[in-house]
Length: 216
Image (cartoon, rainbow, N blue to C red; front, side):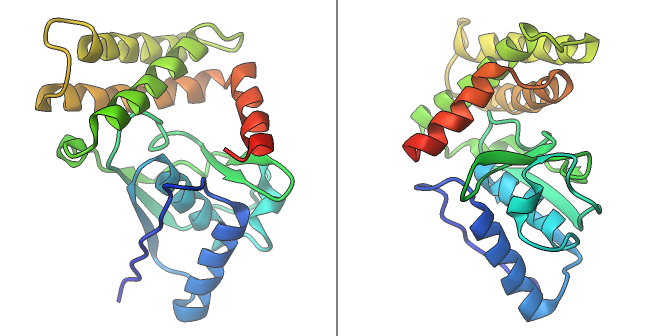
């Protein structure tokens, strides 16, 4: 009785229109589901987080782009990442591009209720994507370490994530291996937690505006 959706995110990031269409389609077919399960990368994670909230909050998702605008907790949602780096599996933000702005749905209820980490799922990721998304973790931690709102939690997670990234990319055992996939998946989780505790910096805000204007 499950509804399975294959969502192409190669060309476009999640949009508020897309979230609303998924919510409306499922509601029309089955009503409010028991749970939403995301199996994929950061965009799929954000789609599931946003859709889970929109099943219980009325109106378009663009009404909730911002901090703590969600009124009710969403349905149970589970994240199963198949690529490591964005930290979307543990962040409290679901980034969406709307008709007027690119901004996340951010609140305590955005976070997944359950996360399943299996490094074997990232074994087939191409080398360029494996490297680039892993560098996303590294940059997250540099941002949180040097921000003005950092704290003991953000420092602890960032330092460990940075250490794991250096082991994956810079030491004598660097490169692709099952052991490094393990490390990168844990680094991604810790990098996402570090940024959640410290808040993002101005570079994040600038990237949202530029990607909206440049449609990238």
